[in-house]
Image (cartoon, rainbow, N blue to C red; front, side):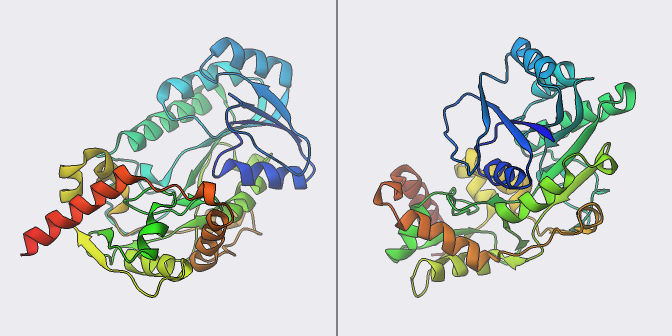
Amino acid sequence: MKILFIGGTGNISTYCVELALAKGHEISLLNRGRQGGTFSRPVTSLVGDRHDLNLLRQVAEEGHYDVVCDFIGFTPEEAEADVVAFAGQAGQFIYISSVAAYQKPPNYYRMDESTPLRNPYWLYAQNKIASEQIFNRAYRERDFPVTIVRPWHTYGHTRVPTATAGAGYTTVDRVRKGLPIVCHGDGQSLWGLTWSGDFAVGFVGLLGKTQAIGEAIHITTDEILTWDQIYRTLTRAAGAKDVELVHIPSDLIAAVYPDMGAGLLGDLRYSQVFDNSKIRRLVPEYRTTVTWAEGVARSIAWFDADPARQVVDEKLNARLDRLIELQRGAIR
């Protein structure tokens, strides 16, 4: 198949492009060319701004793609542009949304694709919900061949994901130095982290699948851990013996640093477990193969392989230290 990735060099999409190439598909990437991607087989690079509607239309009209995959659409305006540009020009359009769109707070911790979409806390999730509504309306009214895919907390070998400290090297550096780690809540809420290579199996299996058109499907890990377990596993993978976890209420973190709190209040603070029955019906080969212990070890090894990658965010460190001191002061 002839496939266009809008994006294609990011944390998740790189793995999807690589697997699609291995399956023999012809791949083009549309992005600004700022983040280079090295793949095992040639891809066609289209350099441009996805916000340029005339460019999108030109790419759509000249490409005649079997599938278009938008990995960098975050706003309703971008969704509207996708519909205008690709209506009648693609056999399938896959939009990457997020499980953050699901009801928060959830009425029930186990979720499937019928769980309502509602998130009053986080603009990112609200924009994903609004974008999904645009695509669904286009499907109903204009037969726009959309498939909506909702990833969970997904990471690849260049990221060490956390809830409050980003996905860079800073947390690894802290645990190796014996510094405490901020853990939101009491550390017992349920969560999962999906290896991008596992996600790619489900995603690539949906390419060109007519049964997926008009559907929303989440692709998530089956390994469920508490946040305490997540951080202690990370600590062991970093080669440290133990770590002090300082449990801080999500509301306090959000009050002190609203930009850190939006994702906590709108997603990370809640126990969530996802039913993957739908993706398995559509893509029977999908399964979780990389555990968090294995995946985070791979990521840390990537950072360790090159000192230039081991960048410590001192501004973030100062924030974390302030939160820890506030919590300790409250206890005192």
